[in-house]
Image (cartoon, rainbow, N blue to C red):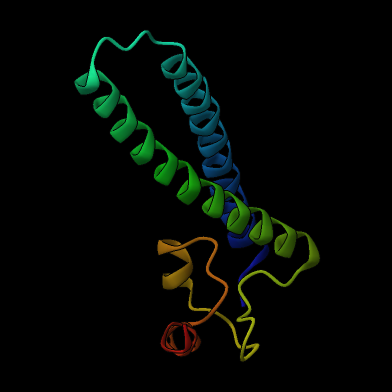
Length: 117
């Protein structure tokens, strides 16, 4: 189990990452809106902008998913269930949480869920 101090440290990391992602999402959204207003001169311009917006959309989608995971983790901290595997209900290793602050499964259960996907 995590100590109160460790729980607070994870909460701070999650909040920092949440703020960074929200800032990125906002800036990228503004940038994408700016691209839509560009006057494209030829097919090359259109292809370049189109490729950039596809990449940006994929990044935005990934960041939205991470933001959702962070919100779930913060909710678990508030409920006192952070750091507990959703599958086996055993503690998730601190080393795993250090790497992936919003981990929902221990290593063993994560492997099981990935095989079932």
